Image (cartoon, rainbow, N blue to C red; front, side, top):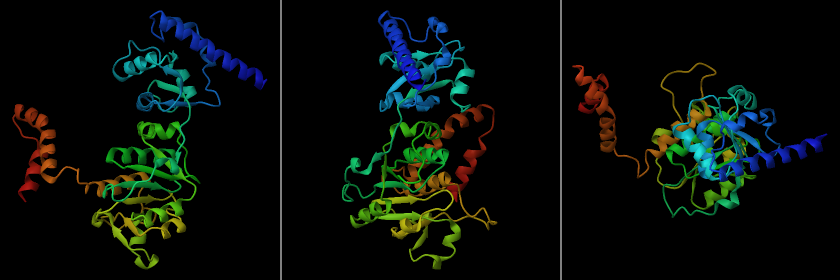
Length: 350
């Protein structure tokens, strides 16, 4: 029975592909009226493929061209495709990718009721690349290199949010521990808003050995701990400092640990410095730490704000002024100045 199912799946794929190839040669658009005759019950992903969902993940996956794409599924029932959805269709046509238009209920079922935004793609999986494929980088190449190292991040939404912040703030490389780490799933891609599709993610079986090797090469290995550990300096022989006091003056590996247990003892022992985020109030038991993706965003921004290419204070003021200018004009037309502008000017005057 399994053999018959496999043969039928392969045959169906060839028939659909042939159908759209002929349509493309005739100048017809994939996803036209003739698709109403197709059996949408056969749109089940094969075991070798996975279903990527969401507008940004699918669009960035097509742009990056790192995955093999079997089919693009665009929700039927809309008057027309515009903007990024129209771009998706054009890119699929250019690459002869079959395009189907199932109803929303079908997409909901296929995605197990994830938020798909009416866009899904059957694609080959992405895997973290082995660390040996990343090549060597010397500390002398750029004194302000920043790599993010993740040990045992298991929640796909946390993982995706971390990747999104890392990409936004300019992290050079992502390295994960192969053991006990979340794979690069469609949920991770959706949580990263598609950043996973364009970032190079590497992994290593020996995270401790990797950190020790980079330290010997002149890199700073900076781990992270919760604020409760920072209040007890005797709990660690490794210096602990606030992220606001950290000086980024050489290539750095920022190491984040598991959502529940943090860094393992072996990995923490390989760190030369531990960074923490200090709270602004006394915290009750159970609230002494931040979500790992939130902590990653705060730590990365604190470090990357020291980057030599980061906007200076004067540039930041000008940017704020530019952002406020349209609303300021609107307020002036109504006879009042925006309160946000007053607050900014008052702080600058002080």
